[in-house]
Length: 428
Ligand code: S3P
Image 1 (cartoon, protein in one colour):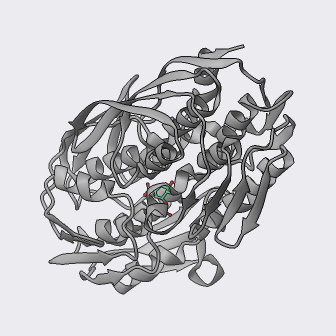
Image 2 (cartoon, rainbow, N blue to C red; image 1 turned 60 degrees about the horizontal axis):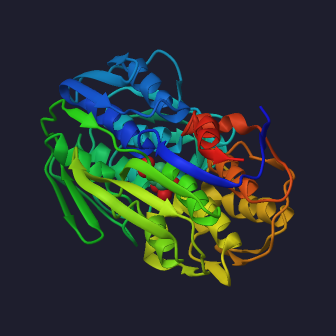
């Protein structure tokens, strides 16, 4: 599908973004491991989270997909059954890595695979700690890439010092730890998003967090619960950047999750000078949620590096667009993890924005942008990556001429109604 983006005069209105992707995955997984019914409101009906539903259904868990909610009927930690076919995680790294943790605890054979992009992404980072806990895992390319075959069961608790700040690695180990006796601990080089810890406590597990260290105690009695998923800040960020850079814009993005370990991009955008107000803050299902108002303003360049990187890793494509429209230089460092996402997002951002006329240079672990160069529309590639397609669309709103985005259907991964939402706000 090719989508055409025309420059807009301005943007006005209320925006509702779909439910948080990370939380939607985790709510289904914990619902599958809990006893009783878990009702998930504002679930993200994107392709990635649907992959998680299909995987847990293949493991014998009853999942009912309603119009605006999902109901999971779990039977406790020991209720999963050996699947009779290969499990397909599609494009979803979260499905594959977190389910690898759960399957490591299950005393049966399973095989996890995914699409071409997912089969190129590193899996050793979860295989290594899970094997150390006792899971027998073999994978393609010398235990590096999916498909991976797992024979689980008989795990022992470990303390794992992860070399990467990755919530997927941390969560895989913690979920496997549910099946071991005693505490399983993960220590990260920098803290990653903490949705797994929060939701595990919410479902009744004993969890302790101390700085960059998280422990979960094994064999808890998880109880099914109602989970209300907040709007996804990663999806909201495209509208927050658009609202900040389009002259005269005024947008209210409602019901967005603002968990500190996810909202790094909000902080950076405010530091860049964006006119942002956080309103109606409240706690929902153990997570902070707010409405966010953004009005157009002059942005200035900034440095983005260090411990904040894991808190905004998925938002760097959107922030790069903001940096292109800002005055001065923006430097992104310590973000080599971007190379292991749905596509190599460092190379993809640099290609996209430089072809549109931006001054951007690639670095090993990030990029440097000299802002203030006008963009021109062109035909660009999404690289099959949802966040690249949405970043191209936001850049196109302020470019001269028309921007055409090829393979734009990939927005279905995290935000199926993205283009309709954008159109509803555009004043041409
Ligand atoms: C996610 C963690 C991050 C993020 C991904 C979702 C999660 O990946 O980029 O989109 O839900 O745990 P890493 O754990 O690889 O950093």
